[in-house]
Length: 142
Image (cartoon, rainbow, N blue to C red):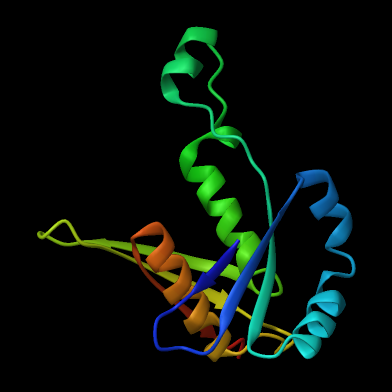
């Protein structure tokens, strides 16, 4: 999946892989992404697992209610995958009267591997793709 923001020279590549592969790939994902971004200039890369969402109607029919496959949990896990080297430490959702929803993610980057510029581009690209107003901020660990 390739995402572009208008009037911005950068592109964002999201590679969707299986959950089992992603668990194994996490061990060396940072180094792979670093080398990939060296080769392809003006490109940000991330990996996301393919997860299944089970609708509430189907959960009621089977009498199995699993939060693991609910829409909100799958969205949360995908956001964790997209900002991988960092950890999400806070999430605030603001609802306004004009049916406007703003989502603020607060992430912590202990190893200084992700720049705020990359996270700003990620929030614009994902926000335009999902039609939400998303903002990602790095919180210092002091």
